[in-house]
View 1 (spheres, helix red, strand yellow):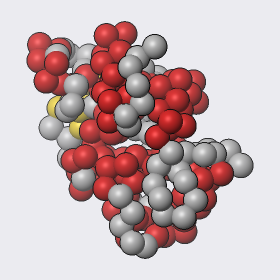
View 2 (cartoon, one colour; view 1 turned 180 degrees about the horizontal axis):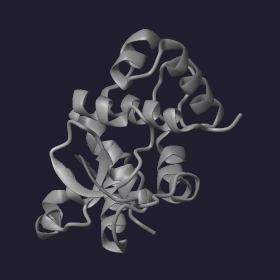
View 3 (tube, one colour; view 1 turned 90 degrees about the vertical axis):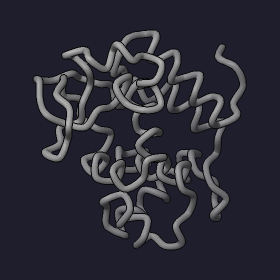
View 4 (spheres, rainbow, N blue to C red; view 1 turned 180 degrees about the vertical axis):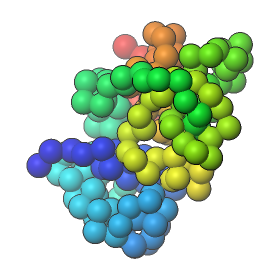
Length: 175
């Protein structure tokens, strides 16, 4: 069973807010249907990113996947300049470490009609990520970290994202 983009969104939502109590609610909070949310949880469990039952994320497997796998399976391909929602080094929790970079005309943004920034288009991990991020600030931070690890920025932004992910998942120091 192959991992899909919405599976990553679901796992990051689980990290951000825990199990909401139903697949219908999980889907609603992430902009997916209940059946898509259910299928995403099942694929994430089969991949070892979520534990069986409702125990939550497998932190060690998730850290390894986000840091070492995500850049290969969901690499960033910068697009044209567009209006959108800031991501990568231009959004929390990374923006506080790179305040001058937030004025960069090449800052990464998810295309979004409700966005308040202009920058270089970065496709979000999943089509519903901007909607889900607006609903949950903690999820937004996880998605921003994932984008930095995917390649939305320079090496220093990626290194900082890796450190933050390792710390949040209690997965040891950077190697």
